[in-house]
Length: 93
Image 1 (tube, helix red, strand yellow):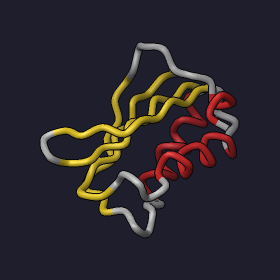
Image 2 (tube, rainbow, N blue to C red; image 1 turned 90 degrees about the horizontal axis):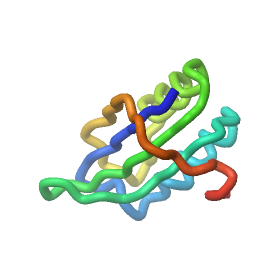
Image 3 (cartoon, one colour; image 1 turned 120 degrees about the horizontal axis):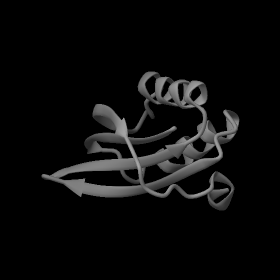
Image 4 (cartoon, rainbow, N blue to C red; image 1 turned 120 degrees about the vertical axis):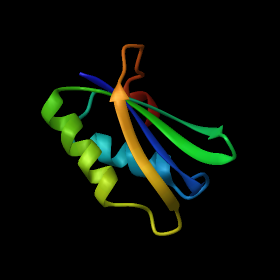
C-alpha cells in the first residue's frame, strides 16, 4: 500500500516534522518513506509518501493525526492513495 499524506498549516516547516515522521516510520518498520516541504496557496505543507502493509500505514497515519509537534501550527492532515515511487526509509536515517 502507498499513501500520500499532507500536513498543512501556518507553521509546519522548520519545527522537526520530517524527523518526527522518520522516527514514526522506523518505529513501525515501514520500508518506504519520502518527505519534503512544500508551499501551497500561502500555507506550508509537509508531504510524506509512505509505503508498507496497510495495518502499519494506518497506525502511522493515526500517530500523525493524534500527535502534532508542539511548535507547529497545523490546520489539516489529509491523505490519499499514491501510485508513484517512494524512497527507502533507511536512506533517510
